[in-house]
Structures are given as structure tokens and as C-alpha cells.
Amino acid sequence: MESKYQKHASDAVQKALQLGAGMAEAYISNSKELNIEVRNGAVETMKLAEDRGMGIRIMADGKTGFAFTTDLEDTAVEEAVRQALANASCAEPDPHRVLPKPAPGYPEMDLYDPAIRAAAVENKIEMARTMENEARAFDNRIKIIESSTYQDGEAEVTLVNSHGLSLHYGGAYCGMYISLVAGEGEDSQTGFALKYSLRFNDLDPAQLGKQAAGRAVRMLGAKPGATQQAAVVLEPYVATGFLGLLAPALSAEAVQKGRSLFAGKVGRQVASEQVNIIDDGTLKNGISSSPFDGEGVPTSRTVLIHGGKLQGFLHNTYTAAKDGVLSTGNGVRGSFKGTPEVGTTNFFIEPGDKTAEQIIGEVESGFYVTEVMGLHTANPISGDFSLGAGGLWIENGQITRPVRGMAIAGNITELLRNVDAVGNDLQFFGGKGAPTIRISRMSISGGGQA
Image (cartoon, rainbow, N blue to C red; front, side, top):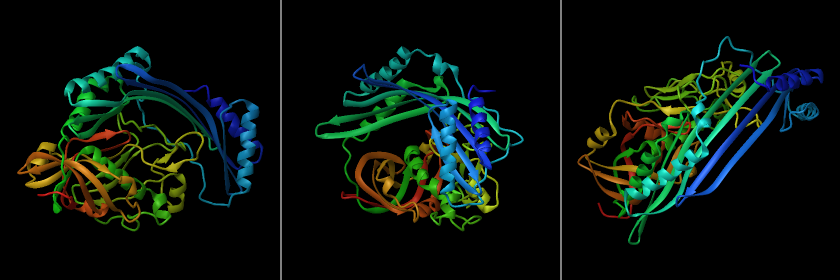
């Protein structure tokens, strides 16, 4: 499918070559985003933002330069090309900075649901209202709805380079988010729910409202528990948070810079046999799926950890050239204003075969963690963490009482090795996802009684 931007991109590449670039690439993205926030049934904010521009990357004499422009007229594009060339002249030469050649084929994908654009704004406002109303109706202890939000966006990407690569795709997404507070006496607890999808009909505002309310209400009356070693069950959202800690360590860039706790461990057991971690840019209905990455390399399914063994790392063209391997299609670009970094696409822990109920049912005494605080303070290089945690206590396979003011500490590799059950309830939160996961033993500290 030709895009109206293909000519702008081709012209930019030609101009760069005329002005002395050895290789050149033009990346154009055009995106718009709608944000509707409802409070007490009324629209509090409604924003429609658009962002469009071109990023130009050139290589000359082994040196790389980059510049971008939001104006696609010829004179502005030529100025950006000249700026990229000037930036290259100040750079250090690096033989691994190369541009990819066209691939034999690219995955076929259905990333655009016309229903997202077709739905009236009034309908989208009503969905945010429904989510808020259902949360309030769930329990009279729901006191404050902090935010009830509907979001959607469309993006179109065009990429041309001097090796003859000329690509285009368009996609759209939609999502909803609610956060709220439940209160009883002096006690107040928070709850949230979110869902992002490529399909408009996947959104169920009533269910999200109830889910957020349920999360808050179940924590009312929470007290600290006792310090001990016990089994820990991580809810999908919390497991996804821990998975996010692993993302940087599984990038080849981190390995090459000596910043990965997995460096030198390919082929070794780094997790329990039950753990499989995958990055899949071709995942059907994945929010981060696309036919090619930010450099024009086809996306792919990359198994990073299989049966607990480390299989490899995520690469873009640069890290792949350095290691003498092929890019995995993980040259991720935040926008036209930056160059491709190594990043994850749809990054997840593969589901197992047990239900969350079965996993909890097998625990004699343990901690079902539904929220953690301070995940950003974990050390991504050593993998050490010490986090505040709240959740529900499990006795004889039953959830008995809410607990908060707890702390869990350990090392992410130790945590991975001690996984003894993986649920079948994989849930995505944006581009990352995980099922319920059980860790056989962890240090839990709290200020209360057992």
C-alpha cells in the first residue's frame, strides 16, 4: 500500500545522497491520539493531539548523523538533511552503523479496526461514564473515582532507505483506564483496571469498573503480617512489573555495554524449567505488533528464555552487526524524533496450564501479592530489589485476609529460579504481559503478627 508520504521520504533520501551521504534513511510517522477523561459523569478533559514529522538518518565515511523536521516541505527537508550531514561530521566513525536491505517478505497483519474511528465521540464518552458508574454501583464504599479515561490513537509509518527499502503500514488502538479509592472509617485503599486493544469491541467498560472497585474493596481492613519465609503468588499485573525489570537485561545493547545480569549466560539455566519468556512483534492483536521495526527489519517471534534456559538477546541492526548475527526486528522507535534503540515489542511470559485458583489452592501459607511499590528502585544490573507490597494472605489454599505494609526482597534471578507454577491467565498491560506466577519461597517482612 503506497502512502502519500512515500514521495516525501524518497525525495529526502535522494537529496541526502546528492549532498554526499553514503547511505540514507527517511522515517515519517503521522499519529493522532484522543483522550477523554470523565469525572462524576461529566467530561473533565478531552484532548485530540496530532504529531507528524520526518527523521533523517545518514551515514557518510562510517559516521552517522541524525536530524528531524515537522515540516515536510522541500526546503525544510533539505535543511534537515544538511543538519544530519553536519551532525555526522562531528561523530566518531563506527563500521557497525549500517542500514538494513529489503527483506524477502514481511508479516501480513491486520492492525487497523475501522470501528475505532467509526464510533462517535459521544459513544466513547458514554463508555467512560459507564465504567465510572459501574465502579460506584459495585459497592457503596467506593468514595472517589480519581480517573475514568477512554483513549484511542492511529498511527501511520513510512520508511524509505537508500538500499531500496520502501515500506508503509497503518494501525490503530483503543483503551480504557480507571483508578479509584474505597474507604471505610479511617481506612482507604486504591484500585485500578486497564485494558488496551487493537479491537474496539474488546473493551468492556462495565467489567473494568467492577474489576477496579473489587480490587480496592478487597483490601479494606488490611493490616501488616508477620516477617517470614513463605510462598508468594504474583497477580498478572505484578508479575508483568517484574518482567519489565528483565526487559533491559535481555537487550543485546545492555550485554554489549556490560550492563546485563544475563551477559555470558546464553545456553545456561537462568530460571525454573516452567519459565518461557518471549518477545513477539508479529503477535495477533498485540498492541505492539507491526510488520517491520523502526529500521524496516521484519518483526519476529524471539524466544528469549525457554524451559528456563537463556536462548539469546534482542537485537537491532547495529547490535546485530556488532555481534555478527541477524537483527531480531527489535529496532524500536519512540517517534520520528529519535533513532532506533533496542526495545521490546509484545513481551510476555508464556502461560502455563493451571488456573489462578489452582495455584492459590496449593498454597498452605503464603502471600498473594496484588500491588508492589518502588519497582523503579530495583537494580537492573544486579537484579536486587526490595519493595513495598500489599495483597491477600493465603491459608490452606484459601484467601483469608488483606495485608499491607509488607516488604519483599530478593534478586530477580533467584525469583525466576524459584518459580514453581505458571498460570494459564496471561494478561497484557500494554506491550507487556504475564500470567499468575508462584514463587516457592521468598523473604517477606512486615510489622504485624502471624
